[in-house]
Length: 422
Length: 173
Image (cartoon, rainbow over all chains, first blue to last red; front, side):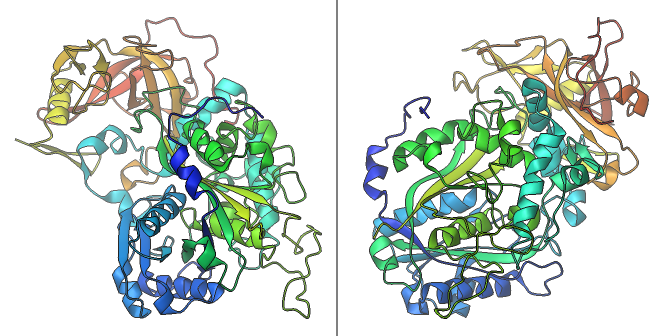
């Protein structure tokens, strides 16, 4: 694997932080529909779980970051509920590309001496309150100014907005519906081994391509599930993380909301079948000092089957144009060379705007995913690595993981984590 | 004065201070497709913006542009999200490469203008017309009226143009 170009981003400074920060704790609520909890309550639930996971008390957390699309709760309320006194907080507007970006911000504010440990959360009633697909109340709001250039044409939901990129990739490279459906097949296979996944049923390529068309090229089963849930990731310096209850997932590099030129939703800057990962990869891999070939496990954002495929391709896990072959080759399935979204991701486990994919990779690096394998006398799961239905989902010998977050074709975030070498 | 009107049951508003969009839609209502051109770079841009992305020039002039081009990609919606489109499915959103300034200033750039596939009379296109359109189809611009002084650009099949033998369509009908 040769990296295509040397980035114009100064990688000398980030290199000094390579391996210096870690994910110390992760937690989530159940993945639900009709949660009957407020986003404040869901956030409290997820953060409390992450604190327990890390073995941290309220006094150990002094920073908080969250993101939302005006569909959530602000950090200080949740911190107050949990008895956390904050030295830093910020609530950011945004969706799918926020997870890794906020982890980068957390590293920055800790490095600046503003706080010591940051809890990042995303809390959403994505099914029962504000539906990300733009259905329900969001579908009939007044349309103002710049929005007229798309919403007035019935071009509003994420699937509708991204479809020109997806279709053009099929046109440019001959990608087929069946190839891309393999993403759903893989993720549903993984979800069937994840007791907490919202959808645990395994699907076939035929199931996907025979499900009803939402908007071409997306069938119903090419689209992710909408769920109610909150998720939390706790970031701190590696030396502090080593004092926590769980082995740290060590952060090697982060890319936050890296963009294509002119990221308007009208695709003026082509090729439109290329996504932001094309640019992000030149920060992600050099800063971590590794190449795609070194990665054992990926978490490529699956708002749609296509987003997983496009990102794996543009980050260089295969050649440009060969994403369809890559995702349908078995490589991305448990038992394959480089599984993707072993929790089932957004297509099956639940929709979290990217958080659950980082949570899953953290657990994979610990060697402790929560599957159906029996728990041994030491309280740890005895992973069988038998990936048949209802079985194991722990990947063997995970050393390096990559998360590839997606906001839209023009914007993405990413992160590489490593198992603690100590 | 802001532009405002109800279109297919949707309330569309362009604020008074949103000078760029206000002028754009007002030209459309005169039956003219005009885009901003920076005097500095000489380049056109779409949709309306507050500066030229190639020269940072904040000045612009509205230049008449021929509303003709070829479909670069499209969306064919079968499951409506917005209530206004419930009785319109299937409908198409076309992303059209204008002939003007195609491949400039760099190879893959183009003025890609969105709009629904409509009939020559600006009605939503029937299913048989939708099935005939794909990547490469030649289209021309027509306008849909929102209110006095406020129209939207739309696309219809260019009956006079030479059409590709088989425009590329998603393989499943």
